[in-house]
Image (cartoon, rainbow over all chains, first blue to last red; front, side, top):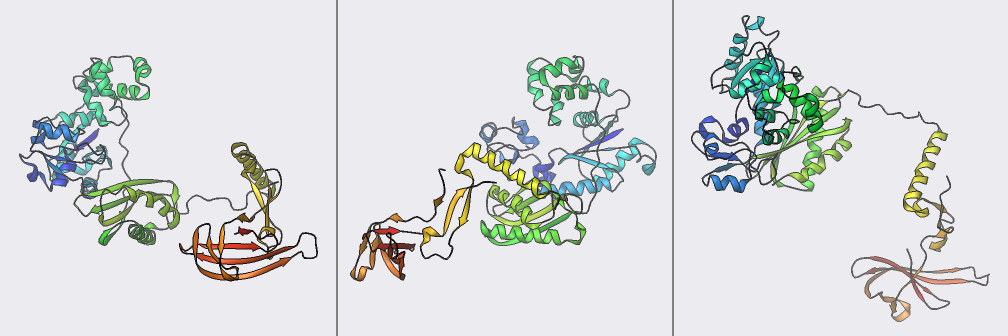
Amino acid sequence: MVACVLIPRFELVVAAGGHEALAGRPVAIAPHRGGGQGAIGEASGAAQAFGVRSGMALGEALARCPDLELLPDDPMAVAAAWELTLRTLEGIGAGVEPQRPGLACFTLDGLRSLHGGGDELVLAAARRALDRPARLAAAPTRFCALAAASTSRPRRTPIIRGDARAHLAPLPVALLRSRERTAPLVATLERLGIATLGELAAMARGSLSDRFGPPGVEAHGLACGEDDPPRPRRVEMPLRESLELPEAAGGPALERALDVLIDRLLARPERRGRTLRAATLAARLIDGGSWSCNVTFREALGGRERMRLALAPRLQGLPSPARVLALAAERFGPPTGEQRALLDQTGEQRRAALREAIAQMRSAAGADAALRVHCLQLDSRVPERRVMLTPFES
Amino acid sequence: MSGPRSLSLPRGARVRAGPGGRPLAVDGQPVAHVRESWLVEDRWWTSQPLRRRYWELISERGRDIVVFHDLIDGRWFRQR
């Protein structure tokens, strides 16, 4: 059995400073980092009553709801609040798979004996630990648990036992929007008249594969009650450094601050010599809100210079001057990084590789692509006699 | 490339010279300062002797320019 924890409008609640701030007010996040400059993010219930939806163009949202209040996106605060929520769930012994801020799942196997022997008791313990409005459900698969949580009434905790396919059959195909790969299929399926997951499951998988490719096969599998088990995240001590900037910094000052953060992060003893595979660069902005950017390195890095080369260009994406700059390690690599051969190539191999490279350059850029500088009389008083260019003969 | 070629070959320059052959402007750029001047005489024992008066100059725009006056044919050249 898999449990799903769904906290609706998690980003909006964090950005607004709590549920109470949203009560009865039409509020939305805008601009949203995931939806381009002109799109809004999560919208409050009052805003949704006017027809405002997440992903809608800002102009259309304001046309539908002229009193709509716009809140700046705050990914730093969202990440901190979500980390706290995940740790709370891990505190009851769950191996949690975070899917996005506000949505996580974990398997109930192994937790029953910890919390009195039943699925209900585990879910009750999770609800008590969260201590905030959340929708919880349990089902045989992740997708089925999410569907149950999405469609359940508040403060109810549905537990679906038995056939997941039967439970999913009457539910709308719009639930496929919860998966990144299957989300683009929803509009097409609805246009084709396939409204429920049961109708989707009744179709031949081969036909869906022909029409949609791998996402079609995945969607059919989900509708048939097939899904992968949760993959719990590895619990590690967060490694994060931040620097308060004395004034609205930009350009070289910001890059210097990044250097300091990289040095501090690499010097942390908790790193234990491990390399970094991914990091998050974040900033608290001077005009409110925050900005963040996840960077996955091409290979695990342990050196300052290469890390700086990968991270510094991302600073260009800052929407406004930063008040605080932060750098956090997201994933670690092996302690020594990738070992490169130092002397594994003999001289002849290296010369052959150089010949090949020169031949390719000449075929692409002409005969003058590779020339050799010959020193003739470096101490000559006549400059044109000092050096000469000759064809490069490898 | 047809064969070996020299680097730093002289290129013709328009130089307005003052008293003593001191350059006042190079290719229309006024000269602000003369850093150094030296004479090169070479191959005087051959049929193609070389006599050049070199000037290292700073233009008013702050560029470092090296020109020479060919003392055999009287023409001016830039060289790096």
